[in-house]
Every structure is written in C-alpha cells, then in structure tokens.
Amino acid sequence: MLDILQYEFIQNAILAGILVSIAAGIIGSLIVVNRMVFLAGGMAHTAYGGIGLAVFFGFPIFLGASLFTIAAALIISAITLKQKNNIDTIIGLIWAVGMAIGIILIDLTPGYNVDLMSYLFGSILAVSSNDILYISILLTIIIATVTLFYREILAVSYDSEYAALSGVNVKLFYTLILVLSALTVVIAIKVVGLILVIALLTIPIYIGQKISNSLAQMMILSGILSSIFTLIGLYISYSYDITSGASIILTSAVALLLYLVIEKSIKKLNEK
Amino acid sequence: MSILQIKDLTFSYHKDNVLEDINLNVEEKDFIAIIGPNGGGKSTLLKLILGINDIQNGSINISESIGYVPQNTNINTSFPIKVIEVVVMGHINEKRPLFGYSKNEISCAMDALKQVGMEDYANHRIGSLSGGQRQRIMIARALCAHPKILLLDEPTSSIDVEGQKQIYDLLKELNKSITIIVVSHDISVILGFASKVAHINKTLTFHDTHLSKEFNTQDEHFCEVELLQMLNKKSIKNCEC
Image (cartoon, rainbow over all chains, first blue to last red; front, side, top):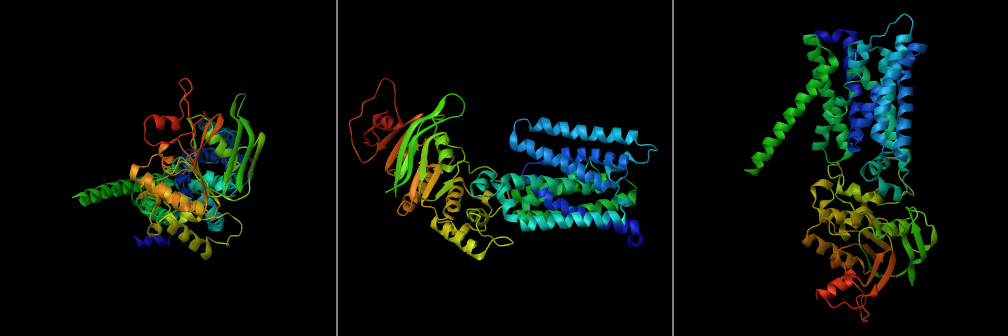
C-alpha cells in the first residue's frame, strides 16, 4: 500500500483531498446550519458556466469557475434578501442556466479539449501543483475569514433577526457566507466533481453536527471526518480502479449508515 | 417618570390601518401586559418599538435601552451551540476583540445566566434544554446588555404550565429593577403579575389593574379581562373596550 505514495500524482491527490475536506468541513457546516444546501447545489452546477467561459476564452479554469460562481452567489444573495418567496425558482434557474452556458461555450470552443466528465465527477488524480497552490490560498482565505468573523457568522446563522437588532450587518455576512460557499464548491469540484459536491458538503457534516456542542467544533470534526472519508475513498478508488469522486461519496454514505446504526443501538441500550 | 412614550401612533401596511391612534405611557418599573387577538396589531406595535418597522404617523419616545426576547425559541434546536454562546450574543457590538469574545463579555454573560438561574447549564447544548429553560436563556441574552426595559413577545407560548409559572416568577423578580413589557394572548399574565394591561385590537384600551371601575359589556364584545371576570377567576374590574 505504501509504495503508491511515491507517485507525485498520488501525493497531490492526498494533499488536495485533505485541503478540500477541511474547507468542506468548515463551509459545509455553515451551509447545513443555514439550510442552504439547495443554494450550494445551484452554485455547484452553475460553476460549469465558469468552466465553459474559461475554456472558451483560454484563461485558468479555477479562476473562471470562481469568478462565475461568486457572481452567481451575489445574485442569489441579492434575490434571497429581497424576496424569499421565489428563491426555489431562482436557484433552479441559476442552476440550469449556468450549466447550459458552460456546455454551449465548450461546444463552441475550437479544437475541443476538455473532458466534461472530469468536471462532473471530479479528477482528483489529475490535480497539479498549481491546483494545490490555488486550493491552499482559498482555504487560507476561508479559515481567516471564519476565524475573524466567527461571532458575527455565528450570530447571523443562529438567529438572524436578533443579530440584526444587536447591530450585526446581516446582509453583509449572509452574502459573505454565500461567497465562501461558492469558493468551496469550486475547489471541491476538482475532488468529487460538481454533481457530487453536495454529498461532500452534507454527509460528513451531518455526523459532525450530531456529535458537536458548538459550531466551531462541528467545523473541525466535520473537516476531520471528511478527510478520513476522502482518503479511504481515494484508496478504494485506486485499488479497484473506480471513479474517485463516487468512491469518496459512497464511503461517506456507508460511514453515515454505520453511525446511524450505532447511534440507534446506543439509544436502545440506554433505554434498557 | 415615563420611559417609553407612544403618542398618536397610526400604522398601516397597505391601505387599512393596523394600528390607530395608539397612546401609551410606560413608567419605570411598570409590568405591562399587551394583550389582544391575533392580527390585532400586537406584533406590529412591537416591531415599531424595536425599530424594525418605520414609524409613519405619531411618535415613539424611548429614553432607556430595551432588551428584546423574541417569540420563537424553538427554532433551530438542532443548531450546535452552547448556552453561553447564545447568551454572549446579547452584547451590543461596540468594542469587540479581534478573535471571539472578551473575558469581560463571558463573565457578564455568566452573570446574566445566574440572574435567570441557569448558570449550571452554561456548557449545555441549547437543543438539549426544555422550552421553559430555553426561554430563560433568551431572557439572559437580553439581560446581557443591561437593559432598563425588557420586551418579551409571547414568552410562554409552547411552554408547559410549570415552566410558564417559573418564567413569570422570574419576570416578577426582574421587575424589581427593570421595566417589563410582555406581549401575550396568555391571560394568566394578568393574574397576579402585570400591573397594567393594554388591550390592542387596532386601537388600544388601557386597564390599570389597581383601579376598579364599573365595567359594562357592550353587545357581544368581550375583551380578555371581561372574560376573566365572567369566569369569576379573579375580580379584575375596569374594562372599557
């Protein structure tokens, strides 16, 4: 098993997997407690528009996807804050339109060269050193922002009405949470792909939420769990030559199932 | 001395007035119950006092700080947050340390928890508490900013009877030093706790529970105070609605 660690692409995959898992643990926690899962799904799919844009105009794919998804996050934030009633429809719209733009732009790009599947299902084994650098920078931004504004983010997430009354700029921090989610979604696409991003941002987090007493603890535990699932999934993917993203998600799902069974048995034992 | 003064307040969301010519004087250490039917304008008045809604006609003068305890304490019970973290949110953002909370803020929050008798629960997860305990935590959060007026919106909805009594006993205790305004359709507030009762159904009728006047029920119109008298629960006289 250890001999596979000498390959650079495996080292990069492991590093990327851990970095993205930490980001997913932090931001996934915010997405789950703010009930933004559907919003994150919309942003993940609309990111494909950014990928198409980057391919068409020939600039770095991470950059294109980040800018495009941040724009989508700002639009979603503006609409959510103004009229909450139509939010489902608007997210559905952004979800599909972003993706459609991406597909058409890639169709139009002369000398087609991008493997669509690698973005849908991730390509963790193809992570480059530049990708690692980009992921590290984003993770640093995420950790710095969440640490500095933890109390505001906590106040807005827990009780936004009260936060507003005590002078917290709710709109600003709500938008900030969305933008950070957008960035996380973009880097997670590389690892599990845009279709499976939502699972990475919810399954480990669900367990993390159950076993934590505070949001900070939930972020840390979710990050650790997520890293473990990613590494196990990666190993299984390498051993059996199956798609890494799907393998990571199924590993997480099996772990969740195990957790639920154990939780239930403990409850039953306590009742007796 | 009047610390909250509402003068000729009229408010409408669209065409029809929700509130009409509201006049209310709250004096120091009053315990006021604002009662009235659903849709009668209680919540609107509350939002106007808190400054969530903008005043259209009339005026509200508040000379002291207000602590607010919102209605729904049962939302977000799955949120992983400790009691102390909820209470410390009550600090108004003036000065804050670069990271997290200052020692001063934490000790202040612990004092507020002591005031409501929940200091042993500081590190419990908020979702593990009962409805009544959670309500006391919300009161502690409001007390954190040392308000002179405490404004509570339906503090006993979805709390069992024992919990309700504890909440009102606590409010009575707090009332020794601060003014209490309770918005409620729970009639038991008036029994033994409130010193004044304001009934709101678009217009406001004031009942001073200390005074006793004749009351006469006008055709098929009851307010809760009259209802209580009909039930002979306690002889509260004075109702002009």
